[in-house]
Amino acid sequence: MIRSPRSFVVAVRRPDGKIALREQAWKNFWPSLKFFRWPFFRGIMVLLESLHNGYVALEFSAQQAEPPKEGAEPSQPGGGASMALSMVLATFLALGLFVALPHLLTWGLGAWTNTALDTDGFAFHLIDGVLRLLVFLGYLLLLSKSKDVQNLFAYHGAEHKAIWAHESKKELTVENARPFSTLHPRCGTSFLFVVVGVAVLVHVVFLPWVPRLHEHNFLNQLLLILVKLPMVFPIAGLAYELQRLTAKDNCPRALRWLALPGMWLQRLTTRPPTDAQLEIALLAMRRALKREAATEALPEGLFILDNAMAPDDALPALA
Image 1: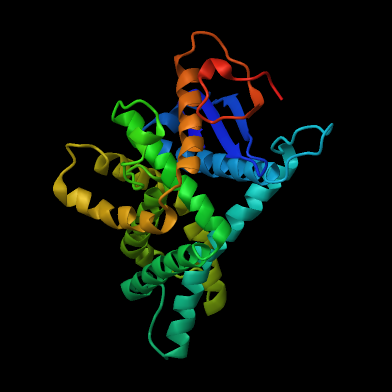
Image 2: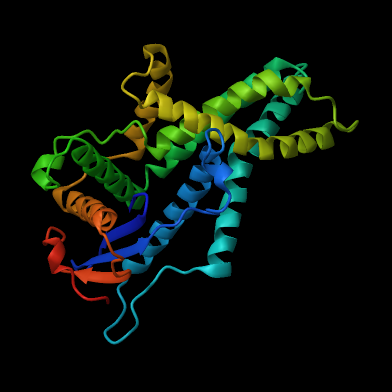
């Protein structure tokens, strides 16, 4: 999956060896709301767009894992209400896992140990933050045990190699891309880790000052969780700016050190790709760049290729 400023390209190698290539023009969410492109606001939009694109790419990949029978219509990613509902459910699951669960575990730990852990103290939010990091790491470790996810992570590493090759102004070939690292400072994994880290800091600094919201202890915990949920968006905005800063060559070394854990975490979410996997990432990159350089609109839709490294002018007609 490669998204450029004006294009969104997904390439998948099907079980029959052919390559399914889905190309479309990319338009930012809510382009009329210009303030979502301002610093500290753009991170919110990047987070939403990344979740959407990841879901679309995974759905397309899953559909292409079982190519249609001869004479059947080619599979296209779903849309409309079904996709919106799936994304809403996935978002609520993520918020429950990474926001509500650590909070309730911290509250339960205080009750179990008979410790004075309450939301008006810094210790509560510090322990909550540590547990959130542990849940996040445990979730990634559990995912990484799946063979399907390991294959996905190898394609993730291939994407990074393709990006490095392009940024290094190399011709986009397997031989040129192969030596590059599978880690990249602008990776979404690093962004999510920075989001979690910034959330811990913001919660520790600000939430102890929130007054008690209900006399009943459990209801007070639930109400504070509801306070945390909308805080995800400004935290994402702050985390995005921090990640952009740490990815620059002139970034102060002290700030770059803060980004190192996110880079280390990519060792879980990327794997060294095979040459066949690297071909797919390079194809997606080449097609996105081709669309960016085009002076007129190119066809959109699903293409079926026999060779991932075929010249761009060999692209077949729409499937």
